[in-house]
Length: 485
Image 1 (cartoon, rainbow, N blue to C red):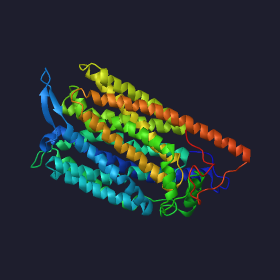
Image 2: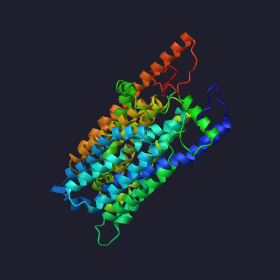
Image 3: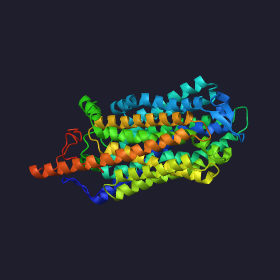
Image 4: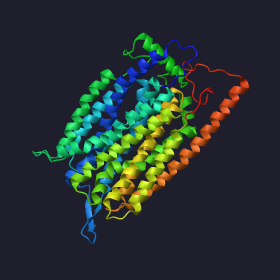
């Protein structure tokens, strides 16, 4: 936690620590459980492929056989069913962000959570390609309420120095979901009854999600200005900390000027592109992970079980870079580049590795998973380096538009590349991660130059820090604002 406080601060460091601890215990678990359920619900379809889901819905066809008898499969329909989720996410992102600024955040998120839980349960009644396409589109549309809104919500409660770790805590739950879901899904798949073996997992997890929406409705706070979960002294501290962020006020008025400024700002495109490019291998692993591991020669059970360490690596890498960037200032873009380089090595192993060395190939998959941490840092930077409520909300939504596009491209290139090699998928992932290295390095240099320029101007005019919470200034308007590196 930062030791810096506004000059007019009327609270002690001990009081601030108590408040931060309260927020960490209260809000972070709500976000973590919600994002875990979102990622779990989104990924059930991948696990269901091991229980005749594709065959029952006609999503995979055998187009030939290799010399050793291994089937050559066409997974284009399955790829489309995976991709359409992100089309729905793409369509829903900006409207959901608009709703979350105009109405209570807790109400928007809880209602969306309840509805997507119902959609997950309805998957069990899908029986053909058309049905699953509609189902997945609606699931993506409703799930789009969570991540962009959480990105902005973090900025209401924690200082910019604290935000990367808190964002990492909820964002790492993509790995948590991947870690805990395979064995649970396998157990659910062993339920023998009148239903097909893949249906109970959709019914049970959808019901859990629907019940969780009630918890969110009553427990998730909206902002320090309105929540009833703070004492008056805690509210004053929270508002002063928000003021310290130099990030503008919390506004329920949609500001068109800030909207257009966001689309003129290269920082928005930088974050969106990093998330898009990391989304390609991430989306491919999420959709084709069990299928690719199965193609290495592992059994169906082993393929499910081996996705657990992929999730663990993902969660650990996100938390590790969140901790590093909290302790070492100016390392966010450096960590993005390092994570991308590690995953580049993984894609090369999967691309060129000998097919008879399945341990090496699986190690390549584990290394490829590290890039999710780079996307997580880009999410936190989209919040920390943008000021002004509407601009921040627009940038957050735009980064997740990039997330959608990347997750659409990933399954498509893997689906267009015949198994068991999936060469086009690994080549595409390699190219995208090289792009992350270039964009991350370039943005770091540009922002470092901008900070130096603002410091020089401040010295020349002899300026002092001004409070901007009531003015709702953007980072471009507020020359006291300094960008996180």
